[in-house]
Image 1 (cartoon, helix red, strand yellow):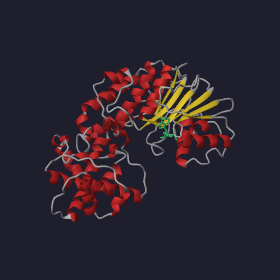
Image 2 (cartoon, helix red, strand yellow):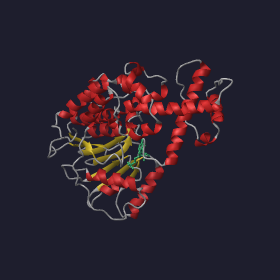
Image 3 (spheres, rainbow, N blue to C red):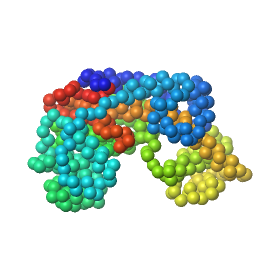
Length: 410
Ligand SMILES: C[S@@+](CC[C@H](N)C(=O)[O-])C[C@H]1O[C@@H](n2cnc3c(N)ncnc32)[C@H](O)[C@@H]1O
């Protein structure tokens, strides 16, 4: 379903109301609570979720809307699905390219790049590209057409050098500039169409600020890592988000990124073990400290998981400078960690219902900011979530309106 232009704001406000109304359900992280505050109000749902297995949680983890759980789950799931519905962007912008251009690019990355490029149906001809946080500049090279210029901004010298070498190898004239995009001296080259594929948090919001200040003619971003920000709390970009009473911590901003990526059995097992052991240790530290509070622990080298559970816990207790209880039945303690993991993953399904609404709220904040600054804006999907879960794109142009309305966000 497509929405008329004004509906970017209407949609944002509906998401805002939904997120505000149900904060008690999505803010607290089951990993850090033995008993979540909302469980008191929804005992049947909590009990039902807690009785399920880890494998059952896994089955619906990335599609929590499919779960037939007790009230109020189905109503919330339906609302979340309606509010998160976004159409695919129109395509057709992808030009043929040399068959060897993708040598050196991992297959999935190349598919993301081609999908991104295909969705760049700008209204104005492109005289040149700016690839923002370009890495080796694969996206920019894929977009570059005869007669166009390409500049890539990247702050990792090795990626800049590798990108330069690749452009030379393909006989493409591109400037790979060593540039910290957060630096005060970072300027946009005039009249370039700017693209940013998966530039994290502050990196893509800086592009929006620079682009509006420089009246950049056209731009497209596919945001990611909303929580990679210098500020502890979210800094709204648009007037609509600034007017909202929703205050987001850096931790909250991590919610949209919490899908489990498709991983092999060994990686999944290792991730599960790491979490189950942390949860097992958490039970022991609560007992040892006589405090019912979660104790954050540092990330640990994977070698720690090869130790016996008892050694793992003693090592972690040393790091945190706490004394564990004198006698521990380690088998029981480890089993308790795995039981908690199953409960945590199932309870997280409630929180996961708000993952996409929160992401869309953040993306619409970016879109509204551009709209407030004189851009015609579209928001839509540029690929399936199996290719990348960060599949939302904001496409903006200063000149004529897009042919079919401004937004495919609906
Ligand atoms: C997630 S990667 C995306 C790379 C590329 N756009 C792609 O999709 O393959 C983010 C890139 O931003 C670069 N980066 C991080 N901080 C930066 C900064 N302050 N200035 C410029 N580039 C930066 C990183 O080195 C990395 O290459």
